[in-house]
Image 1 (cartoon, rainbow, N blue to C red):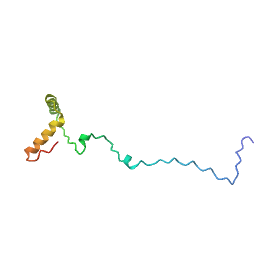
Image 2 (image 1 turned 30 degrees about the horizontal axis):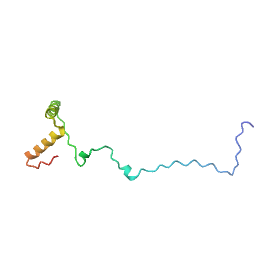
Image 3 (image 1 turned 90 degrees about the vertical axis):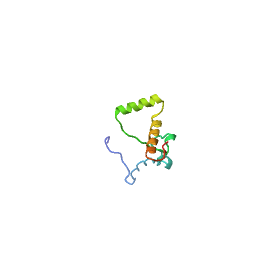
Image 4 (image 1 turned 45 degrees about the vertical axis):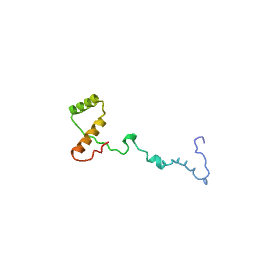
Length: 93
């Protein structure tokens, strides 16, 4: 009987499958981590963007370089000038 199946008693139950590993859900603080880094200088502020033609973009970049000021500084100044022109408070910072 070399090819015979192994003999097994009839009253033994089938072996139970191994339990699945348990994965703990992330804790509350981990689940709410922001996706992107935000610099402290941008907390509480909103982005404001617009599109312009390439020539105006180059001229603006050249002005920034010539004056040694950042785009942010010039755009804050421009926004405040727009507010003043329309009799509004100069509140952009």
